[in-house]
Length: 490
Image (cartoon, rainbow, N blue to C red; front, side, top):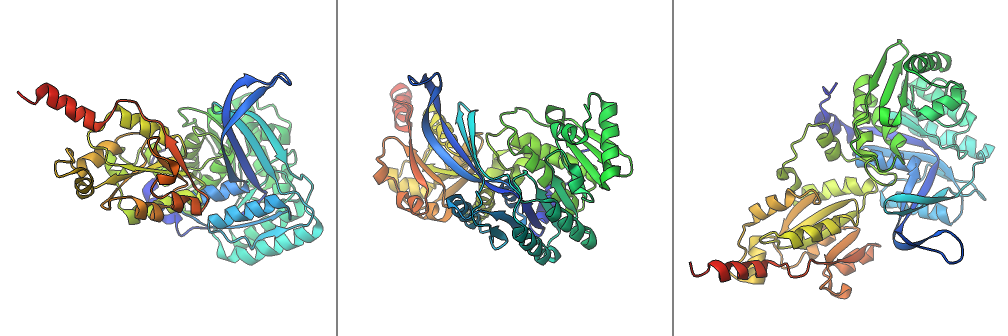
């Protein structure tokens, strides 16, 4: 079913206008190592290494849409607490208008804190309200959606059962969408799916469908019968059943059924995979794909996201590669600054942490490779600023570099740990760092933090410098010396 021209589809997404309505929350990740047992109780001690605070819940849907380049608006209800301020700040960082995010006094803004060690989740701590929003908030939210619905192509309802999508809110929004002939896609929760009656598409997982229908889904026959019955009962156009390692099954009101096996190669974390499926199904349908092709696209994207840790997004490049529609050669990684800045804007909007490092990398050796691999692990993607030939000659003398800039760029771009390579001709990457605005600036441990070029830039907007260990005794100078010692007189 790989007949979708993914590149053409992705080009359409920049003009696609999507409204996300649902439970906004914060996802906090605390990363550490667990190598000790507490003397106070038989529990692990986590040595904290880094932390990350992201948009979660419906916010992860927003992140996915921004990563794909869509125009996004959001409507929700949150509290008036400190977490609400942090959430609004993260919306602002993604240049999202928060005027549709309403405040309800005294309400807790949802925050989920996950503690991880060795990429495994140890514990999750939830601070949230599961009570329905009050009647005043309901009416105000319905009005917000009504004001925006004429200017969107798609509505996504992200229900985490935290009280925003009450029965009244759902009924009014779905009714508005049907009147306007807008696709409305729902990621459902709970035992009562009748609340979603009239939606275009529901995207439950197997457990959610079992809970809502009381069916065991023990075999393919029961799954098919249950899916088709639910479509009839709820007046749906489609049902997309996500089945974890078994893939996705699609049912339609016409009685058709299609099953797509899972695309994942490795599964690290299923957090947020449902958000990704809903997002790609929605944008696929809104962009003109039929349901089978939209499901194929969603399946490809889900296979990517479960290979990451935490609620993550997928980029257009990742989808193109996974779909086999983009060559994996190094050419596509080498970018000029204007093109790279545009790509990084989308990645940043999707909540991905950008790591930057720089260097000459003349005569690439194992020390370089291990350094770059360590730098890549600090975030979600690594941008390498590469000194041009002219820059290296000024810094190291007329006999360097030994390898020209074009060849160095292609060799480095062939490494899996590097996502983008950009050349710069200045003596330092200061201007490049200011333009790229990385979240993390990585440099070798032979530097003091205060001496790292660009430190003031990244710290000015909340980024940080990380010093990365080197492989001892490995350097281009030593390689040149060894070659001259052994072969210089032949």
